[in-house]
Length: 351
Ligand code: MRU
Image (cartoon, rainbow, N blue to C red; front, side):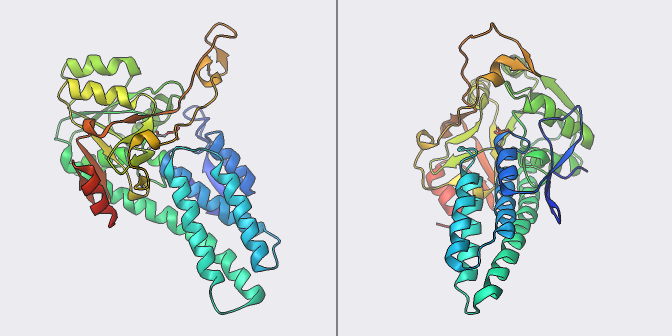
């Protein structure tokens, strides 16, 4: 199976998701600025994968830093972290990873040994930590999958939006991890994948990834979801998340909100699968989640060709927020949260 992202002696290697499914090409980022650009341009995307990339970008930057003193190393860390933090605002996993890496740096700098030895240790520990974040993410996704699989009945057809699979994570996936796990248990699961305009993560990535795994997948345009729900062709919806507020409001790829409302109207459960690192207890509700505004060119152009009148105004909010009342449950690695989310999510996060 492909590797979404990995640490190599040459740098951070990732599959270029802008070129899938036509070409399976890997790029190696040799500097932290290249990692930042890969996140910004969606060579790598998906909340947990962005978190891993951010951690590896920092590790790479610090490895190349010429700092010879603790204050200089801290200064370099903060500069690198601010470049990486400015790439994409919605997925909280990015900021979670930066904070975790900063914690490791401070831990090492607080150690008793001194001088060059300490700086060398800081560089090594940050590389190790970034690799641990990747390995943990895969294990977490397997656990999410195991816990969520029980929610999908044998023989069901499940709708997903965007790509919350191996490509969006360190591996295995969150929403697609639940589907994978159900399939591994021997359940016959069919997936309907929304194409997910305008960046087409569903058509380009989810359909490709599931086909690689031999899981039956049917591609539909976003506007067909309501039709198939009304026709009783779908038994569940499962999506990932970019940030979940303390009250259970869920930010995810633009179009998710419409799917959740349609699911409610048609009596179909709408599930969210996400690691605890996607939960942001500092935000009381989804209204506080920053929604990334991407270039309108991603709306007016398709595969490099203009599909709209030249100069037409277009908008591109890349995410929307689904109010918690539409969410049947949130599947995490530590358990399945249900209403009231203020209580259940805090319980799972252990605070
Ligand atoms: O803009 P993207 O492709 O990074 O958006 C990705 C999503 O919205 C995913 O559904 C989300 O990050 C969950 S990934 C496990």
